[in-house]
Amino acid sequence: MLFTADHDDIRRSLQKFIANEINPHVDDWEKADIFPAHELFKKMGSLGFLGLNKPVEFGGSGLDYSYALMMAEELGAITCGGVPMAIGVQTDMATPALARFGSDEVRREFLSPSISGDYVACIGVSEPGAGSDVASIKTQARSDGDDYVINGGKMWITNGTQADWICLLANTGDGPVHRNKSLICVPMKSKGVTVARKLDKMGMRSSDTAQIFFDNVRVPKRNRIGEEGKGFTYQMIQFQEERLWGAAACLKAHEYIIDQTVAYTRNRKAFGKSILDNQVVHFKLAEMQTEVELLRALIYRAGEQLVAGEDVTRLATMAKLKAGRLGRELTDACLQYWGGMGFTNETPVSRAYRDSRLTSIGGGADEVMLMVLCKMMGTLPGSKGNS
Image 1: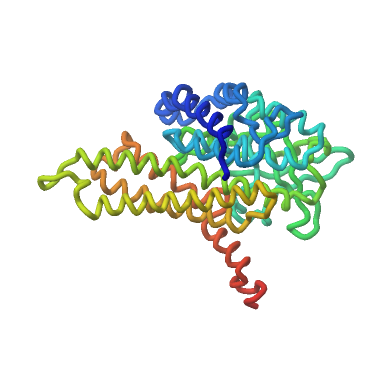
Image 2: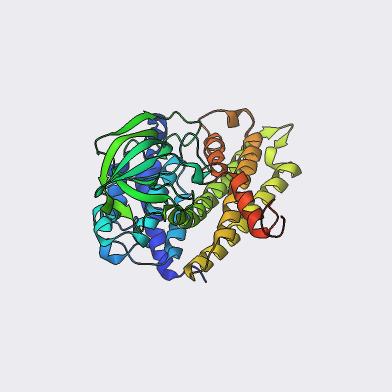
């Protein structure tokens, strides 16, 4: 059994926090195109929410990954996609590799304040010419004595305008593309770091997303996470948690939209009866609820295997793929049943429609997920079993 009474205690505390400290402010944050990350993260850090599965010696709770998965699912109850995504970057995208492979010194400097909520973190992998194709990044960290000198740029960086540090993937050598990269903790206040612009996005409006440039940025080599040249491998491991987080955060968000659509269509009348009374509507909603529960079972299975120390690349990839596809189908169907109101920005279904679209892009596009699965199946051209 993945969850216990201890999980439920934390779950109830998180539900209360979301109801009191987040959801009442979501509409204002969406209108402002940003939320106060430092203020919110400090509150969450004080309650222990930012380090559930992080090492105790650096301020975490030292719990296993199932607690992080539980938290990801609960964050789906936030009535927008931007805020939970920003929290997920802090807990499950920018810090897992640091917690697992970082030296004690670098963990004290960057992980501890991220767990306490004193620092806001962001993850710097994607570039204008290298999104899902991680091996093709161009940002360079040239060795200069005891320092790295960084030049390049990163794109679509969540928390980018408010972050105190970035977990940066950069080329630190000239060898093969899968063995020439390193993860480096770079303070955003470093000379030469420029937040070029805050991106204007279709959805995830309350989450600030930046384009960032690095011009001869000098950082000590001690800021590197783990071994030089292992950055690609560390990031692929980090992606397992990111993709599972992304899928789990969809569950309650999808259920919320189904519930809202049931309520709306029950009260909306057309041709002498409620919209919900049409078989095509209530059958479709039942089908969508079933799909959400199937996705939950897949995510929980992957979570159990991850806790057991197994490689969950296959299941995490499947979960991420399914969550993105389901989000597109579900929100599109529900929006249709809202009719003209679904096309207005004042309804929850239109926000979900915009926000959910990112799941099929961020953290590896659907097509990349399919390539990973085909490679594991031996059906990708050039892979073992299909040469």
